[in-house]
Image 1 (cartoon, rainbow, N blue to C red):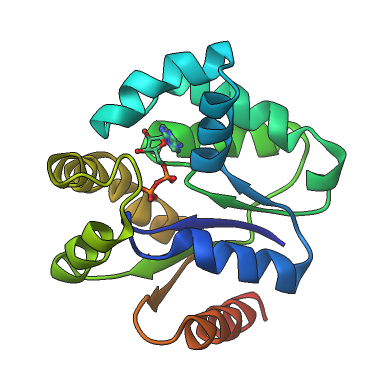
Image 2: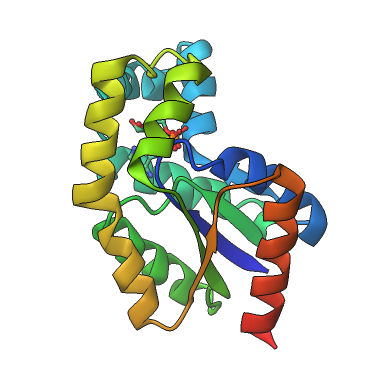
Length: 186
Ligand code: ADP
């Protein structure tokens, strides 16, 4: 299974990704987690990413694409992966296609977790991560709408899009995702 997850901040991508990766026995690759780990370890990549993350902006593609390419080249990603937080704009989506084409594989699906704006703001304001301050949240939502949401049409056009509602019990959402994906792939 080669899967990407897309959805606004607060949709629960990280949570669902853990469950889906477990179900499909594939590595969960979260670009946000990798950036945060680099930040914590004070690596050059972490230092460069920090200023963007703090503002709610996307880290530049030049840094992000290389990082994902290195990660996908690892052995555990050879037979499948779940990408969480990448691609985050159409250019990254095109780069991902090119990376996969280079090794002769295709994505199986793009899973969209959909959630309305009001619910997003509510969830993020109680989460309390460093970049969850109100004005940063607002900027991340803008960035999502302007830069990330267009990849939904991109994957719809590629006939890879599977959309599920991101509300309700965590385990019900996971079950709905698995059901929708098997229907799509059957
Ligand atoms: P969210 O809860 O908003 O989905 P993530 O943990 O996925 O948060 O990402 C946190 C931050 O890391 C983003 O706001 C952005 O600055 C950076 N980031 C993560 N993935 C990418 C990416 N694919 N391209 C650029 N920046 C990214």
